[in-house]
Length: 163
Image (cartoon, rainbow, N blue to C red; front, side, top):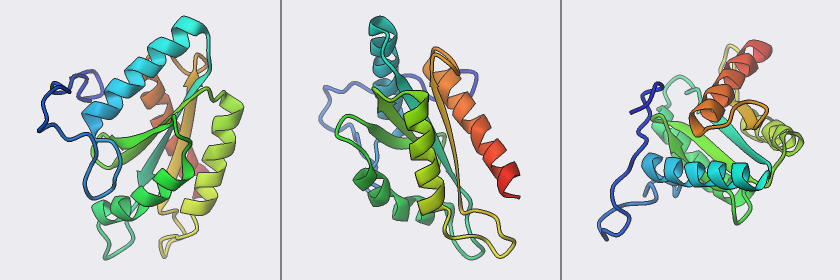
């Protein structure tokens, strides 16, 4: 576990009983997403390439469960991404999207698109159902933990702007 309480190491990939995708969402499970993101941060750092991360935090409507919201969003995230992108569950029900070869400007555009398409539904109080934030390497940090933290902070800013 790290400072954020995130699982940083996963089971052995050589074992056939290890699950890489959540069966309900078709997104990477947390341990495998973190492994992929760690590899991408190392690659981007080594070669001086851009890398961004988007965090999507669900906010359930009355009578809905957050898990159901994430389950419904899984296919949407998978359709939206390029072949080399990595989407998965992180920190429980937070959806994180790793975007290799994507600079800050590209992450900003995709985050806005996600806010528009995912934020169409609102609570009766006008609160967005999904909060979206982004972070890029090296502007917001040089590790997976730093990027996740910065993207989650951006979702909090998104919540304040939407209020």
